[in-house]
Length: 299
Ligand code: ATP
Image: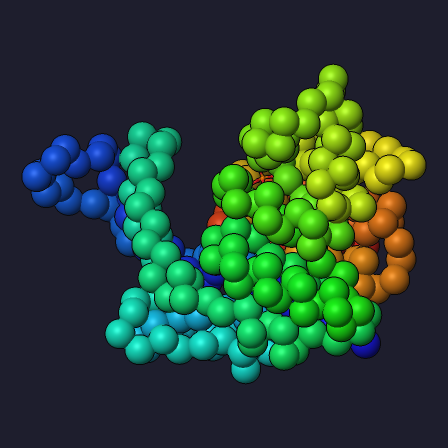
């Protein structure tokens, strides 16, 4: 069975809720504190594993309790964590999130994620595999892993989030690019690529390398383009509870679907349904649906 190798970030999200945000220098009492596993890479790996794919995660944590907990959590999802590096003297990636009055204030510390190295991914990937990356780990690591993956006969999927201009270096090594509308517009701007409408702007990116560009449109679904074809799928009508991680659910499920050999159109349909299910539950990784949930939703 071909594997999905996810090269990406893993964070501990530390979430406090309070009546209001503290001002500079102020201490206030909060209501509740919870921890959640996070990081786009880890979320996408969980989404793919819950769809039944064979998944290996390549990332880095610090030699601390958060790191150990996160790796154990991934292993409990059936994900191969042998290539997660433990970096001495560096903290595991963290996101400090304060929620008050329906808004978020977030400080992210990349920590060990900044030390992720592409060599571990290059050593894992084989013919027929798919490698999936996002932009929360160093671009140089992704570039070396994608180049090795291509030489090994694997397919490369890039979720260019959060968007940054260095993505230009990765596009020639990318087979399938997945972005939301904001990321599409930023990247098109950096490349000087223009077009009237989402599909035209997406197709303009094909000249930079990817053979397929998928643009997620939130509740409105998605548009995917290749040089020859356009697929548009409307979003499923659901009542969203928490859209955090919808994009990660979409990417992980898409990679799993492509790995199961059903083709792009079917994989897009499954990912669109899985992501619609994920927005109906709170949290990111905990809201990722399982293959049977998606089948039931689509039947
Ligand atoms: P996030 O940063 O919140 O994870 P994103 O901006 O990367 O999200 P979106 O385009 O918002 O990604 O959503 C990804 C996919 O999730 C959409 O293409 C769609 O399939 C699904 N989705 C998101 N929001 C909704 C919604 N309100 N109703 C139905 N499906 C949704």
